[in-house]
Length: 296
Image 1 (cartoon, rainbow, N blue to C red):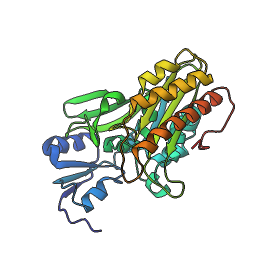
Image 2: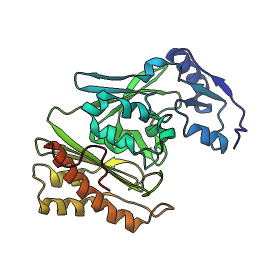
Image 3: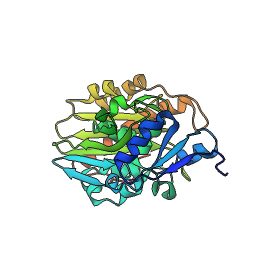
């Protein structure tokens, strides 16, 4: 399908130039990074910008850096970059695992982590992982920089708090000091690639605290604080696991759509949580399945 919408195209040489243009055009501008969503929207006339600002030439946005337990993922970092990064696999294997589940090889070569959360679809695979790491999104405009907690980032389905004149610089995670084990359980088609019918990320810490977040099980990706409260301070016994499974069903609000029914999502949310918790705790102690071995 060809792109029939007419627009100006700019490939700025630096961030200052990009921000000046974004400030001038505001809601009439669209940022192009990976383009896996934007190009589709242009072809389908969902997006009709006056200008497309291609930031791929701003190479400083393509870095993955770790400084003092703070992991910074630039806004041009693709899911393929995440998968190929020894730094990510060593220090944040849960993010590495979730990246393996994103769409297809071709899409992962183009799609960025920042773009994934900017699209704000309820099924965004990176969102639950970023949530359990209490990630922050660093954004900038001509008015200055600000940090937005991932917990405040999503304002609804396909909506974020990003202003029209702002550009994402990086997504930053503070890695916990206690030893951790994690698991991302994704329910999708058994053959081929698809958006998640449901996804649950679990991070188990050595101090018997747990972080749980879900995607595609409500209008936006989010943490599950009531489920965490059941788990925190406890070893993962059968009794605690059963109570956690019961609790998460009160925190999610899945819908019926073309990919799955509400009832099936509810049933599988309990299954995913149980398996993800067991895998995360096993990995915490160097046992169980390896990262990248699916539990669903």
